[in-house]
Image (cartoon, rainbow, N blue to C red; front, top):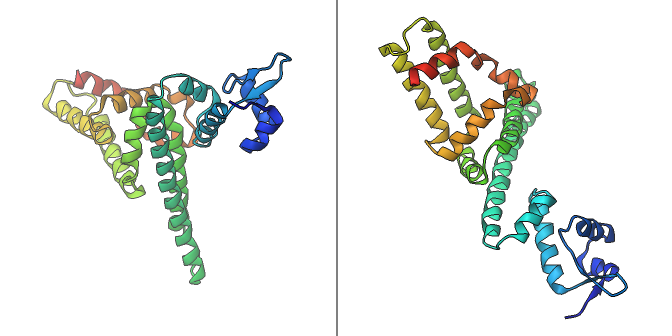
Length: 246
């Protein structure tokens, strides 16, 4: 099999020599060496480089790419599927943001000022996208793939409805803090809580585990997420529901 020196291989692959040196240092793409110590690449290295570039484009860090390519090939379809769903989810979020901005443009073009409701919709869509991207780090690849499918159908209107339901539930629990957690009223509140949680998780253990990690790491949330969750952080409410659920 013919060997290519680093500069020749870089031209063949359409990458920089610097990038090849970087991949070599990180052991992501290790060519064989000549007796004089020169790097010598093969067509097999070109196949691996194509995979590296593709996975890097999909957002995987080089460390994860190395681990993936060094493992059995059957893991590659799983990762590709997960990344495809993540990109499709991002496209869906971007389409929502674009539509919200288009609505504002049409309002202005018709001679009407862009009212607070239109501008608030743009902010709401963008913040939802940022929140989803931030929260993905708490979920496994399997859970992320499932959530990506759910989020395609999740709209700002559904988010507003969920927020309303949780706000009402927290208000009702706060009004019932003096109740016995075993009472019929407390058990009804716990059942409402469980139903709302399952509306998000679908009863899936992977998603439930990730959701638990999200709330356990509240101190590291983004400022906008902390602001949005402020009405739902009363520790007495959480403790009451814990006891009622137990």
